[in-house]
Length: 100
Image 1 (cartoon, rainbow, N blue to C red):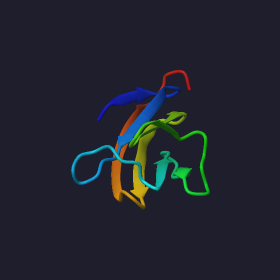
Image 2: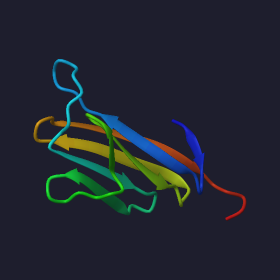
Image 3: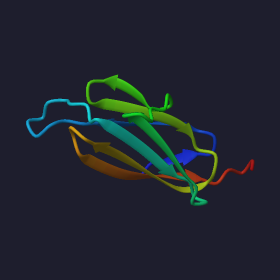
Image 4: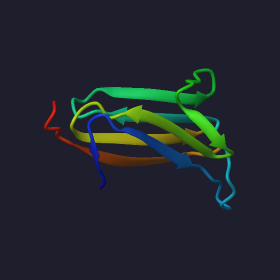
Protein backbone atom coordinates (compact mmCIF):
# COMPACT_ATOMS: atom_id res chain seq x y z
CA UNK A 1 0.00 0.00 0.00
CA UNK A 2 1.41 3.39 -1.00
CA UNK A 3 1.80 6.12 1.61
CA UNK A 4 0.60 9.60 0.73
CA UNK A 5 0.80 13.00 2.41
CA UNK A 6 -2.12 15.16 3.53
CA UNK A 7 -2.84 17.51 0.63
CA UNK A 8 -1.82 15.10 -2.15
CA UNK A 9 -4.05 15.02 -5.23
CA UNK A 10 -4.54 11.40 -6.29
CA UNK A 11 -6.12 9.96 -9.39
CA UNK A 12 -7.82 6.60 -9.47
CA UNK A 13 -8.63 4.89 -12.77
CA UNK A 14 -10.72 1.87 -13.68
CA UNK A 15 -10.73 -0.14 -16.90
CA UNK A 16 -13.77 -2.21 -17.84
CA UNK A 17 -13.74 -5.00 -20.43
CA UNK A 18 -16.12 -7.71 -21.61
CA UNK A 19 -15.44 -11.46 -21.22
CA UNK A 20 -13.30 -11.41 -24.38
CA UNK A 21 -11.04 -8.69 -22.96
CA UNK A 22 -12.41 -5.95 -25.24
CA UNK A 23 -12.66 -2.53 -23.60
CA UNK A 24 -16.36 -1.83 -23.07
CA UNK A 25 -18.30 0.95 -21.39
CA UNK A 26 -20.66 -0.01 -18.57
CA UNK A 27 -24.08 1.64 -18.73
CA UNK A 28 -23.31 3.34 -15.41
CA UNK A 29 -20.00 3.81 -13.57
CA UNK A 30 -19.89 4.73 -9.88
CA UNK A 31 -16.82 5.74 -7.88
CA UNK A 32 -16.97 6.06 -4.09
CA UNK A 33 -14.33 7.03 -1.56
CA UNK A 34 -14.51 6.92 2.22
CA UNK A 35 -12.25 9.17 4.30
CA UNK A 36 -10.75 8.11 7.65
CA UNK A 37 -13.66 9.79 9.50
CA UNK A 38 -16.15 7.54 7.66
CA UNK A 39 -17.60 10.16 5.28
CA UNK A 40 -18.49 8.68 1.88
CA UNK A 41 -18.49 10.65 -1.38
CA UNK A 42 -20.11 9.09 -4.44
CA UNK A 43 -19.69 10.05 -8.12
CA UNK A 44 -21.67 8.68 -11.08
CA UNK A 45 -21.03 8.61 -14.83
CA UNK A 46 -23.80 7.53 -17.18
CA UNK A 47 -27.49 7.01 -16.79
CA UNK A 48 -29.34 10.11 -15.61
CA UNK A 49 -26.96 11.05 -12.77
CA UNK A 50 -23.70 11.99 -14.48
CA UNK A 51 -21.15 13.91 -12.42
CA UNK A 52 -18.43 15.91 -14.17
CA UNK A 53 -15.80 14.97 -11.55
CA UNK A 54 -15.79 11.40 -12.88
CA UNK A 55 -14.45 11.43 -16.45
CA UNK A 56 -14.26 8.97 -19.31
CA UNK A 57 -10.71 8.76 -20.68
CA UNK A 58 -11.31 6.20 -23.47
CA UNK A 59 -13.74 3.37 -24.13
CA UNK A 60 -14.00 1.41 -20.89
CA UNK A 61 -11.55 3.60 -18.94
CA UNK A 62 -12.67 6.13 -16.33
CA UNK A 63 -10.86 8.38 -13.84
CA UNK A 64 -11.49 10.56 -10.82
CA UNK A 65 -9.08 12.81 -8.91
CA UNK A 66 -9.53 13.99 -5.34
CA UNK A 67 -7.49 15.61 -2.58
CA UNK A 68 -6.48 13.59 0.46
CA UNK A 69 -7.31 16.08 3.19
CA UNK A 70 -7.11 13.84 6.24
CA UNK A 71 -4.51 11.42 7.61
CA UNK A 72 -5.40 7.77 8.01
CA UNK A 73 -6.84 5.01 5.83
CA UNK A 74 -8.91 5.97 2.77
CA UNK A 75 -11.01 3.33 0.98
CA UNK A 76 -12.36 3.52 -2.57
CA UNK A 77 -14.58 1.46 -4.83
CA UNK A 78 -15.32 1.37 -8.58
CA UNK A 79 -18.60 -0.17 -9.77
CA UNK A 80 -19.79 -0.82 -13.31
CA UNK A 81 -23.38 -1.88 -14.07
CA UNK A 82 -25.55 -2.54 -17.09
CA UNK A 83 -23.57 -3.71 -20.13
CA UNK A 84 -20.60 -4.59 -17.88
CA UNK A 85 -21.04 -5.60 -14.25
CA UNK A 86 -17.82 -5.39 -12.22
CA UNK A 87 -16.44 -3.91 -9.01
CA UNK A 88 -13.03 -3.26 -7.49
CA UNK A 89 -11.94 -1.82 -4.16
CA UNK A 90 -8.68 -0.43 -2.84
CA UNK A 91 -7.12 1.53 0.02
CA UNK A 92 -4.71 4.44 0.44
CA UNK A 93 -2.73 5.30 3.54
CA UNK A 94 -2.20 8.99 4.32
CA UNK A 95 0.53 9.73 6.86
CA UNK A 96 0.27 12.32 9.59
CA UNK A 97 1.83 15.71 8.87
CA UNK A 98 4.16 17.49 11.27
CA UNK A 99 2.54 20.72 10.02
CA UNK A 100 -1.10 20.02 10.90
